[in-house]
Length: 284
Ligand code: NAP
Image (cartoon, rainbow, N blue to C red; front, side, top):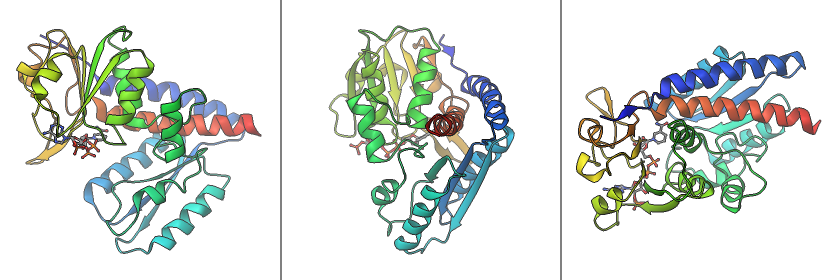
């Protein structure tokens, strides 16, 4: 039976460590502040944004939420982002995704200054992740995933890693982070032939698809580390992309849904915002 990787516990530990760093920054007259743009009334987005604001408060940080209407004109959003880029009291700036269809998501993300891009999603930040060397902010969910994988004690060098899903938010960055740790990485997606055979090769299997219980126990290599990123709401309950019951009989380690990757995403957003404030102090 697999050991459960407790993301809630790990996230709580990270937040306790961050509290100390926030206190140290406050002592130097800098309180980390996160600005979040929420466009429209997507209920899930509203919930995520309010828990981000709540977590900032819990850690002694400031936050501000700019809630714009669903039909807002793109120029208004661009002007607001430019104003927040220039605001020296704000260290972290992010747009809650998804944005309404009439807005150009990539164009909006790329307005965010790389110094404030705590979600790690603008093109410059993503490019730095791929090129290596000088790092930008590591995107929150991939950063949380890596932390959970490494918490198992696995040595990634030379291991086979399979990432199912190739989004800019999760799949692609996590694949590059695994590569940086010298794993041999395969990225699978909706056109991958024989997904089961590909997954069974994985010492580390990261699944970020959004199809409930896509990965069954038969698709998991015995002893593998399985990270389930998927969250689909079914009858009010969050369901992952991995059939937990089947997979946990085969895997060595597995994340639950909820309580696995989800809590880590917010913890890493807070960590990046604290890093942004610390970097501001050293640039001063
Ligand atoms: P996304 O942008 O929709 O990407 C989904 C990926 O899955 C795509 O690359 C797609 O392939 C692939 N895919 C779809 N059906 C597939 C199939 N049958 N077999 C293999 N691959 C398939 O999603 P995302 O933003 O990466 O999010 C993925 C999941 O993670 C969602 O459930 C989301 O809610 C969850 N999530 C959770 C957190 C968290 O903090 N817990 C954070 C972010 C996302 P193609 O590219 O070929 O279309």
